[in-house]
Image 1 (spheres, helix red, strand yellow):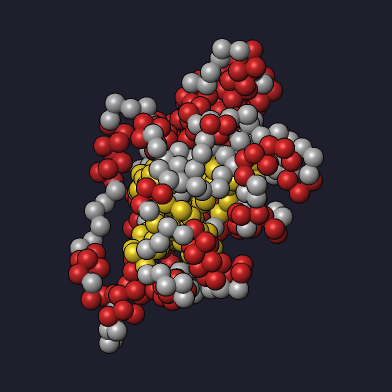
Image 2 (cartoon, rainbow, N blue to C red):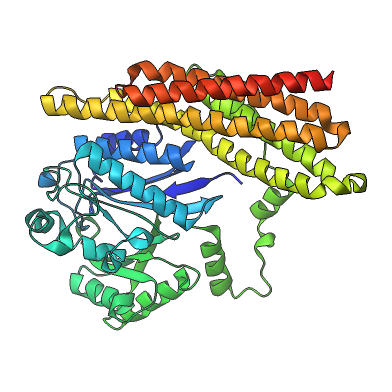
Length: 504
């Protein structure tokens, strides 16, 4: 299953479309990261942009977007209804498919460390990533907003960030990053301009005041509408569904003689959340989501292959995905052919004596395949990080030093990534040689094709390692990389020669 992480960064800008567009562009600046939604709110002076993609590529895009926010948003001049401590205020990460919450936590830590290192912005970890229990609650971190944090970050121990300096960035403030479960941003507008009513309803509804579990709520005045709003985050829509929240807001507002005007969902919402609302309000009997036309069509019509899309992306006049990603893909295909050969060996009773060894080899190849699949995306992301580092400002001595350090770090990662491809592909080739000896002889040609692909992956990765070495200043690291990748290529050439001799 493809690894997909959703990210829903909130930026402190909801009035300048050109700024929001620039942020969205930064968030989708790597292949494999898609823009799903973009919402602007002038009253809150805040935007919420939703993107999703492969974890490593997504992480690099998020870091670039934070840099763009720091460049374009100045909190010293920012005013809006919504509490905030940063230009890039909060960056939630949500596991969608092929990934776990623990992996998203690790990703959030990597993003937080990179933001602090690259831009000098203090970063706090929240929700599932929080290292301090009280910081699971975003409101606790944002207490007093930017202005109070600016005064307390260096003097109040509880406000020490998880990453970065004991001083807010002068214009960009601080940033909160963390992994969390899917959340629905849900607002209800009331037919009144009395802010006290919205605040009272929010107090009755939110969990921290004894209301509904998994509901966070605040009351706001929306002057341009002449109404107030109960603004909520629903952190577990299955345990506390939307319809239950709406009914409680409606009931509490009626206690003050106020009716609900309308409600809205900000950003994206899971289909099941709306299905539950339809089921509740229509009082449907025996309702099944399989009755939804689009769901049945999705079942009946298989999704199109991503092979053509990837090849088209390689053929496009853009630097990524390039040779490093293709090398990793070749290694992945090699591991898949090996899995097939091992499976054909296990499936035949006549090879019963080899079943256990074949099963072990198949598991080893499957693990290598998962790593190589991830390296396809990681290689493209590593190249983009190098490009971004070269694009950093270099007007002052401090900026030059930061740029130089960022280039070295990005180039090092761009070297280590194909080196990992070479190592993994070499292990695949070694495993394929063993399969050639013990596996189903009817599939020996498949194993041999896999061996050629694995060797191509090693050589392709070697080229990508070598091309990066001249740009690195760490002589010991350079020599170690050169030696290791050369040894891998030489050893794999010997294996391939033996396989060639054996297949004739």
